[in-house]
Length: 307
Length: 260
Image (cartoon, rainbow over all chains, first blue to last red; front, top):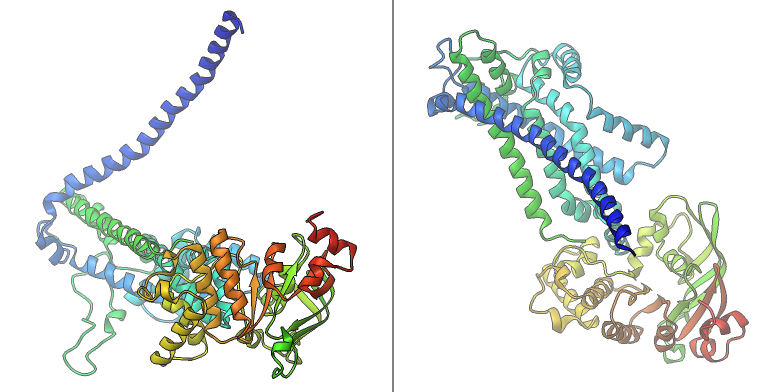
């Protein structure tokens, strides 16, 4: 190879490299757009809200006076609604996922159900609100209660639970199913003794991420008529006299964190804006904490299983 | 050898009669006839894709787990056709154990792996389970290596130990017959030797049907050998005859390494 040819080769390589460098710069800039915007939002909100974050803020009801206002009814409402959501969505979602994956015949009907379940996860949440308004509030007369809200959000997370359950149990190798079957285990024994225990980490992770999404939902709850101003707590689930447990709280009216935030943001006076920011910080912390729990569970339960 | 077991009611544990097997519309096994002798090791050999694993998996109706599979003909286990539609495949699997190609222990403790078959059979008495687990591990020549760490995860064992654990798991339920599907193909030569020795000892207790792609292995451990080719049994005879004096040209070519 002559010197001349070598120079030509170098120029060619340099030209090829040029476009690579252009892309790397573009890629870094694109990444920064996302990260910086997100960070700026979080930091700005924290700066605005941090002065309002105090014990009083968590233990006070909303009020006309901004310095006395707090998020007590909102965070209690959020926790109770999510509790109902979890109780309703987890068993139904896991059972549906197991049935679809392990028992349902793989034919055109199964394909249609599969496509629909996947699509359900993408339906705008306000549509679920409309459905719940018609079904739970008006037909079943459950009122605009914690029960209605929890059931509504459970419809919202149900597709997520079903899809993660299916994916989790699909990840269990067939050799494990065959090992159990070859010992004479029935299909249900195989599922209960093996498939479920080995996939529960992934399933729980999916459920918690679904619930974290539900924590931030506003539209469907406004649609079913959640109040924006609540200055009382639902009845306690525990009583001093027999039967010591009460379900009256299910029928209570409620508000949740994002609705409380929305209420404060829409006030004209700027002092309430910092209340909204503080509530926002708490809300972000709640969802981040749930995601952290999900990651922790996945780590703990998967550590001992490698296929 | 059959002659060593005159007390046996029948010298055949299993008789396959005109068995055909279809994956969808593809006929994979063609008019299989085979007699599995009690307390002997019967080997199925043949080139890849000849249907030996498919035939093996008919014996515990493993094919029933997947849609689109169909059998015709009969496999008689003690004179009862286990392919009959009214026979529950679980009943068959309770009686005939299986050891797979790749060791597939459950991600549980060593103890729980061996005990699982007993739990499926409703056994819950702790002392009885303890005893059976120990006996099964002894029979699988694994007890001395694991007796101090029965509650360790089975995944921490080596490949050969895992395969012996799978054998112990199959033995614990006291099956009448055990199917081995190329049990040593994922193992090194030393682990292979220990499994082979184990199989030779086990025929005192159970009837063994083994698929192997190693002719030497079939020659070493089996009493009878069936040579399969393209879904048919070409020749079935005493192992010695198959390897030294086969009737068919195809068998001769295969055992002499001319194809396969």
